[in-house]
Length: 423
Image (cartoon, rainbow, N blue to C red):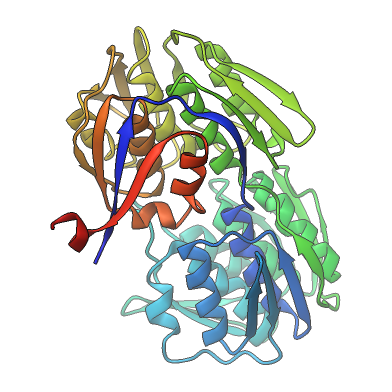
C-alpha cells in the first residue's frame, strides 16, 4: 500500500517550526563512521527513509548500529559485505558513498550503479576517476562497479564538475591514502564542510573544505568521535517558500542563515521579508510577489534542490518568471503536475517560463521526485480546495514529519493509505 496526502489549501502558514538535521550531511557522515573500528556517535540525524536504508546497509556490512532520539551510534569493528547489500544499495544514490569508505578500510568495494530520484543522468564517472587517481583499479561488469587497491596514494584530483558525491567519496578515501591529496574544483556545499569537520574530529587532516580546493593529508590513524550534524538547509528553504506562497508568517528555529544566502536573496527579490537572527529566520509575505529569474548553480549559487519550490511560488506571482536548470537534466518533470493544477508553464531549452496566474486549482497529482513533492505540497497549500497527492514516499525520503510540521503551522494535511482512500 502506498500513502498519499490530501491537502486542503487556503490557509496561511503561521507560527514556529524547528528544522531537522540535514539528510545530505547525515548520509556521508554515517558512511565515514566506517573508516574506523572505533565507536562513533552522531546526533541530530533525522528520521527519514533514506537514513533508514543507509543504516540497513551499514548493518549489512557488519557494523553494530543503534538509534535513539535522533542519535545514531555506529561501531564497525569488522566490515564484511552481506548478501543483501547490493539490493539495498540500488534504492538510493547515496549508497555509492560507501565505495570510498570500503576502498579505504578494506582495500576493495563492490556496489551496483546507484538509483535515486528520476531527475536525469547522474553518472558516477567523476567518483571513479577520482578514486583511480588515488591508485584504485576500477571495473564495471553487469551493473556492478568494483574498485580495489592494495594501497591508496595521495594525488591531485581535478573534477570536471564540482560534484558533491564525488567530492565526499574522494575525501573519505583520501583520508586513508598515503601522502597529500589535492582536490581541485571540489564541491563547496555546507555538507562538505560538515563531513570534513567529522573527519578531522576522527584524526584526519582536511583543509579547505567549503572552498573549491580541498587538501587531505592522509594516512593518519582515525578514531571514533561524537558529532552533531548541521540543520537541513533545503528543508528550511522549503518552509520559507511555503510560508511565502501561503502569504503567511513563519519563524524557523535551528537554522544557519549563512547556508541559505541564495534562497534568502531570491525571496527578498520577490518581495518577501526575511529577518535573520541567531540560529533562526523569520519570513513573512507581501500581498503580491514580483516575477523572478533564477539559474541554478553549485553552492554558493542557487541550489537545484530549491528550484521546484520556487516554481510553485512563481506560479501564482504576477508577471513572467524564468528558471534555468544547469545542474541536472530532466528536472522539470514536476511541471506537468503543476499544470494539472492550472499553472501556465512552458519549456524553453534548459529553462521553464512561468506566467503567473491569480490562483491554482485543486487536482489529483503525482510526485516524480523528492523536491518535486515539496513543490506540489506548496502548490496545494496555496490554492483553495482539496488536492490529492500520490507518491508521498518520495517526501518521506527527505522531510521529517512533514505533515505534522505543516499542521502545526495551521495547514490541513491528511496522510491516508491508498486502500483506505479507495473506500
